[in-house]
Image (cartoon, rainbow, N blue to C red; front, side):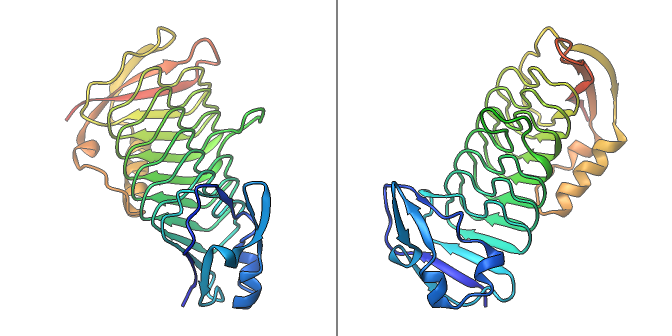
Length: 274
């Protein structure tokens, strides 16, 4: 049985729970976990004031239950194990995580997987802005791992991303892949304007049947093909439980190189035909 933390005292003031770490709680008793100090606005309180604690994390699994939309930093910095969120999750979910898996049955707020280094996050609902992005003043966003979002995602997906993979099944907001250094961003729904603005390397795939946005004039058309690496990437995300339409495998893709205001070694692939 996993360690279960059920939110029983909802709060409009955010709770910051980065002190609740799997590598710590799996060695603790239920009472010790209840006494874990978390941040409630500008006050420090015990976890037990807001959550009912039961079970054990001895098997390296932690479950958050209830509407945790105001619960920040779930899974931040995690290194291994499994976290499930049975409901919504707040900002900074899985920020700077290095390993393990996080699975969210609902939606997540901004900064999902910010500056993450490894592991996997799968959100069955939608996510906010700045998925896999760099924090303001930082040098690199996501540097490894995978983020899968079945629903929509907000603006600046993969901002300054250095490595890893992000897949979004629904609509993507403005400027996905902004300042992308490397890595892959696969978008299956409608996409906002300015994809790949400032990108240096990496791949952005506009894989849906929707009309793509106009690319910036600093991108140049190249060939039409069926990239072999893309097929393997699609197979990989499908194996991880992410829905990939069959027609994406048979389609051809128009390749554009850019952004030539930067290195110009990035690419945007736009689904052309079946």
